[in-house]
Amino acid sequence: MQTISIKSSSSEKIIPLLTNALDREKRIIAGSLKKTSEKIDSLAKSLSVDIDKLAAGEVEHTEANDMKLVGLEGELKILRHLEDELKEIESLEICR
Image (cartoon, rainbow, N blue to C red):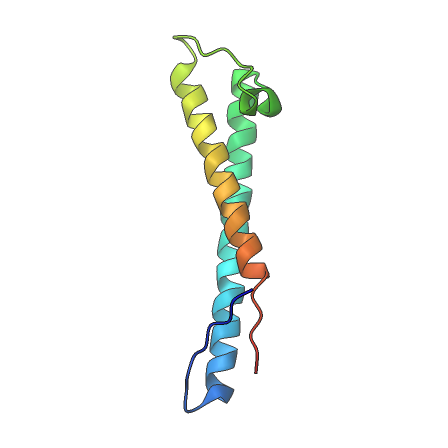
């Protein structure tokens, strides 16, 4: 794990600001995760697609469903990205 230093003349003011900013970012990402998951569930249901099979490349793209499947695959990539971001933020520690 790497350490990032921030110099400040008033750490007693900066630490709560940083803590609040991290908490706010966690809430924003968690909200985005919820919306993205709901969108994925809705798209998968409308297409009658199993997400695991889609991720494994086992779902056939046809002319009729191609664009929706591409959209669903994009949402899955967004979901993974958001999960990674949340994991990184949750691993941060503010040292005093």
